[in-house]
Amino acid sequence: FEAFEGEGSGVWRYHAALPFDVGVTLPEGNTPLHEVPRIEESAGVENLRVKHEGMNPTGSFKDRGMTVGVRVAQEVGVDRLACASTGNTSAALAAYGARAGLETLVLLPAGKVAAGKIAQAALHQARILEVDGNFDQCLDRVQDLAGRGEAYLLNSLNPFRLEGQKTIGLEIMEEHYADHGEYPDRIVLPVGNAGNTAALYKCFRELVAAGAITEDQVPKLTGAQAEGAAPMVEAIEEGYDETRRWDEVETRATAIRIGNPVNAPKALPGIRETGGTAVAVSDEEITEAQRELAGEGVGVEPASAASIAGLHKLRERGDIDADESVVCLTTGHLLKDPDAAAEAGAEPEPVSNDTDAILAHLEDGSSS
Ligand code: F0G
Image (cartoon, rainbow, N blue to C red; front, side):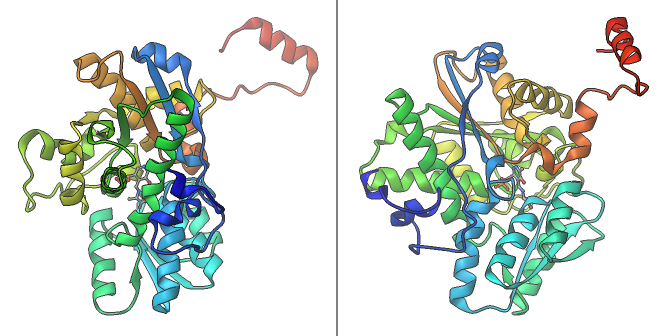
C-alpha cells in the first residue's frame, strides 16, 4: 500500500492502480467506514463496519467510476456521453459530464427512477430520455447508440468505470487494516449489474499479484439482491445460463431492479473464487435494514440496505460465522429516494400553531 501514498481524491490517490494520474474530479472517495454497534449485535457478528458510499459527491459509488470514465472520454475526444440507468449512474454521469463540459444523454426506465436521481440529472443538464421499457432494455438501446458511433457509453460495461470503482476495495483494505490490524473476512454488497462485484474482484486480484496481500487475505465477495430481481443469486445456486434473462423484475429497491446483469461473467468468478455467496432478500427485509441503518444515523436508499438485510439472512442460515469481520457496502444516500425514506420512516404529526397544544399533544403520546 506504500505505492499509494500521495495526493489526490479518494480515487486519485490510488493513481498507481489507475490508467491516469488525474481525472475529472469533484472530488470523490474517502467515504466513511462506520461502526454500527447495534447492528453488529442484532446480526451477531464480532466486527461489522459499514462503508457508506452514499457520501460521494453525487451520493453514490458511481462517482468513483465516472471520474475515470469521463477522463477517458476526454482523452478519446468524444462529443456525447451516454448511459442507461436506474438513476444513480445518470446522476453521476450528468455531474461529471457537466464538470468536463461535455454533452450528456441518459436513458431511464420510465416511472422507475427515484425522484432525487432524476432531479440531479435534470439540474446538471443531461438530456433525459424516459424509455418505455426496463433498465435492461435501456442498456440495449445505449449499446446500439454506442455501436453506431453516436455516443460514448459510460455504463459499467465500460472497463474504465470499473477501474475507478476498484478504489472502494483499496479504501476498505487500507482503512480496515489501519483500524484492526487485519483485513476484513467478507464484504457484503448490493448487486444489480454486478459491476462493483467485478471491480472489487479485480482490485483483490491485483493486490495479490502485487504481493500486497496473500490469496487467503482476499475478502469473501458476497452479493445481496432483491428477491424480485435476483438473477445473480440464481446463477450462483443453479449455475450460470447466459441466455436466461429475467424479463419481469420488481422491487422497492429500484436501483437494483435489473434482470440481466451484464457483468455477470466477470463477477460470478469473483463470488465463487473468493469463497463468497449470493443471497436474495425481500422488500420487507430491505425496509427493515434501511430503518436499522437509519437508527445508527446512517441514511441510505433501499438498494443499499440490501447488504445489511443479506448479512442478517446469511447469519440466520449459518452461512456467515459469528467470528467473521464483515464490511457491508451501502451504495447510495437516503436522499436519492425521498419517497421511500418517508414511507419507511416516522409519520409527521399535524399540530396547531400553539405551544400549549403542542405540549398537550406530546404528553398525550397518542402517536410515537
Ligand atoms: N446500489 C445502488 C444504489 C445502485 O445504484 C446500483 C446500480 C447498485 C447498487 C448495483 O451496482 O450494478 O455494480 O451491481 N445502479 C446502476 C445505475 C444500475 O444505473 O445507477 P452494480
